Amino acid sequence: MAASTVALLTNAGGAHLDAYITGLAEVAEAESIVVADPSGACEANVRAKLGTKLKKFERDHARALADHQPTMALITLEGIQSPSAIQAALEANCHVLAEKPGCVRAEDFAPLVRLAEMKHRNLMLALGNRTRPTVREARKLIHAGDIGQIYGVELHIIADQTRLKNPAYHKSWFADRARAGGGHLIWLGIHWLDLVMYLTGLKIVETCGFTGVVGGQPLKIEDSAAMALRFDNGSFGTVTSGYYLDKGYHSHIKIWGSHGWLLLEPHGATQLQWYSTKAASPQVTKYAGPADTANYTPLVREFVQSSLGQIAPPLTGADSLRVLQTVFACYRAAETGQTQKVG
Image 1: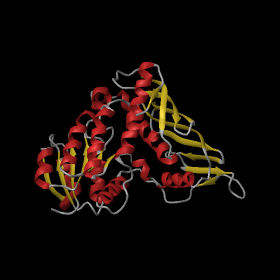
Image 2: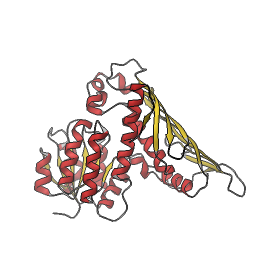
Image 3: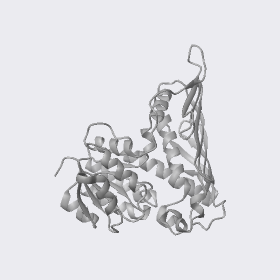
Image 4: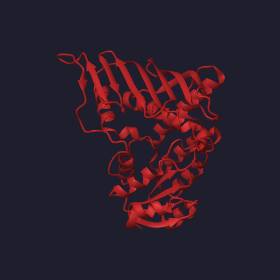
């Protein structure tokens, strides 16, 4: 058994599967890969991309864990299928990276976090935007106090409606709340909710707002969400999360503080800029560091390296649970028409 054997547990419809296969192929520390896919749909792809790294292709998740004893598991399954696979991987003493949402109820993810902590194993949702160089620079600036005490935030992440008009999408697990846990908010909005807590060090403690289908498609999920947030320092924020465009993304995270502001636009030309009155000559500063990448390889690399004890994990099980609790609190608020506490 190689010290860095990774099990990739998936099935038909596994999200971002090709990106994970590419990441495993590119990350040197992922020396030996076991892939388990009951559908067999990805076999040709993994054999082509992983080459000699592929130790075995299995049709059974349990066999992959028992026979090959991997040290870590990358899991990309439907939300409703994920908790049992995550539990099995943790019980097999694997560190786990799970594609979001990882569950259809936060209550199903909480015991997995406790199990991971008991076994001293990493458990993280695939919230890869944390690995962006711009995000880490923004976090550094905020934690250094450059924009001062946080006063308020504005988040929006808008994607395309095109996928929603595809009949195949209507039949997929992504469009069924019972299988996916929710729609745009748990699929894309979750990234921004996680990032704002990561960037500021604050927790979202209450939420209220609305979710629904505004585009007229036959969906069992929301295509739109508009929420208000309260943070544990008493500040407020808003989030708009929806499928509105014909293609591409409109997105930003703007944070105002007592000494300035910061703007992240991951899909924009100027990806990060900020203004601080603490500077000798206050002016808008534009980020000039390493460029962001749009693939999943940095997340896979940090998962593998942190599982080997080489670096700290990009996020913890507690971080993952907190953002899930936030998303499901948003759903409860929309359903009840009442403000909901998070956690």
